[in-house]
Amino acid sequence: MNWLSVSDFLTMRGYGLYVWGSYGMTALLMLLEPWLATRHRRRALRAAANPDAED
Picture: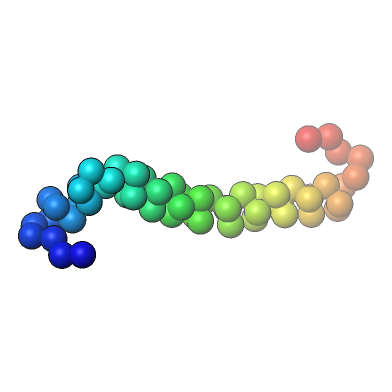
């Protein structure tokens, strides 16, 4: 597919919002997942080291 301008590329014949929104959501989730996994691991290690403490 050939685009004549940057605007044509970004709008992608009317599907730009869907396409770029999908890319953005995927990037967000790919950044969020390792952060949440690390957070969960730290909490689990803390809970294992001190089983009497409450969250």
